[in-house]
Image (cartoon, rainbow, N blue to C red; front, side, top):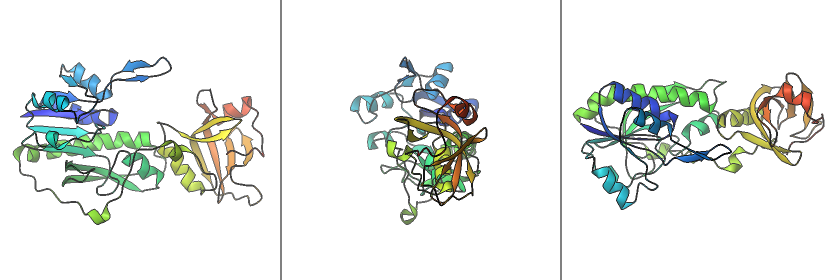
Length: 310
């Protein structure tokens, strides 16, 4: 059976490696174009491309999968099955109709909850206690296809998006491995999603990263860990962006101070007033500098108690 694998970030790599380890015939890999990274803007391959090159698999990197040229290039590989995991583009009907055994997607949520491009980050930001993997047949809508199987994954109180991405990527590969015999035999009776239960997880925007200090300590704590290790949450201080990469909750309340007020700076961190209590910032990044532990920042900067983060 000719299989085309479509994916881009590290989340997709365990699923691709599993298919290769199990001896499935991957005739091509489709991934996003190389992007410039770092201060020198060096073009870097996607994690999925690196695995494909390692195994000598042809790599397709169309700017737009919807273009007739991209569809024609893909169809030349005569895929019987397409497997996708965090590819990053919506597939047109012309692609969905290519494989006789359909297009199967490894999605990082328990559908129909958290359809869209940022289900893992938003599940943490929203304070969920669990999420999971849904293996589904792709349809023209956004993550609306019939579900093949699901696996629940707990969200720990200390999880960041990074740690949860890693666990879900492994769970996704395991679920795909379990279901591949049924998929390739055409014996799957998939379950239709309940549209009334659908929620959405759109890609994160800059405004999702800005800390609102009038929110609760728990909500800000969840926001910060939900943005690690990607963009990071931020506030404004000293005419620049002040990023926060780690924090610790506190139940201490200070009615006298406005939200965003720095209450104290110690070796343990920077205590900031929130809407209902306070939050200890334990890893930060002032504008123009690298990430650092708060203890290092406290020793070398001019922030003082009474400073208000905006």
